[in-house]
Length: 401
Image 1: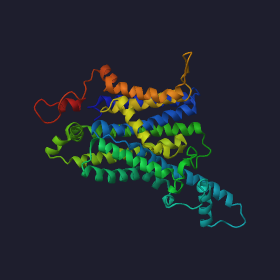
Image 2: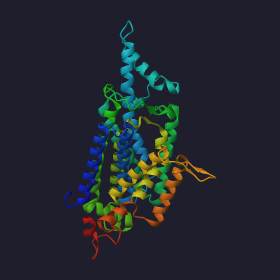
Image 3: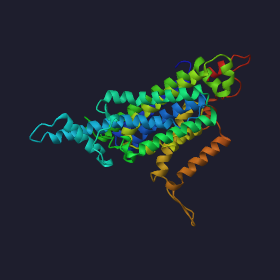
Image 4: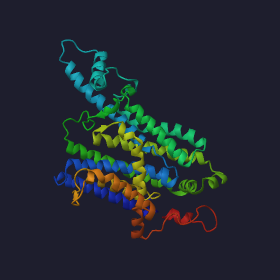
């Protein structure tokens, strides 16, 4: 695949170069720890954008709930981070008492520390395996995958498509978000899970070093996700996915089990989002229900559209550009513009600028930022004609692109 797809080698080399340069600059003190964390979080968002491009750009399923899977991954790893850190503190405190604490006393003390903010000291059933890092890492990927599998099976077997499927995914995401906002959800309601940047067992390691470790892990995960995505869209499987996107009825008449292909892509992309979330939130330091709100999934679709859907590198470029631009505009990096009668504060106008960019790209540059790469490399668009086994079809050219 690497030989047939030179663009994959270019992407991996560019990713490695960015990671190495960021590491060298950080070690030399030329960039801050917060910037390194921003770069690591951006790479995680690129993984989510890749997943969205697979499910929307290549398969034609506009999911407005994929960022919920991203948040699930964050909650899964956040539960272990809070539990293990709190257990260490509680155990150290109770060890000073005249009598050694019982396991029940330790659990009650941990429950009070974690859930006292919502007026409870009971440990919910959701936290039954919170003390196990391997299980929580598995849950970060398997829980989103299982939920996507069940949801997709119910939706695709009923042949829910188009805008109706988009509304259904958005409604499910909204329901999950509203449930998480409740204090009795077992996940601390609106408070969410905080202090996730403090990794248990690594208290002596500075945040500067931890940020580099997470940057490397995020870069490795993005590289693996890109290879997986490229392998998925290559060959016969990828051709079927694009066929479903362009003419689902025709693919069905050709004898393909359309539902199986859609379910496979929907499930795998949910798992990718869960992995990305598990890497993102320890760098962000906090995860709360607002991260799972439907607007977050809409942003994800906007990133892919701006980058150019149907192009893996376009999705990555779109997510990276919007993430870094958002940080610059909303973090005070962009200077305010004084018009005399009005002062433009970019912290207030960033979302307007993002929405305007989405509209302009949709109307005048449907290939997105990825189209600029096509112009630079002289590559032709993949959507220039019919695909399939017909005479004159462009399948062979498409596979070489």
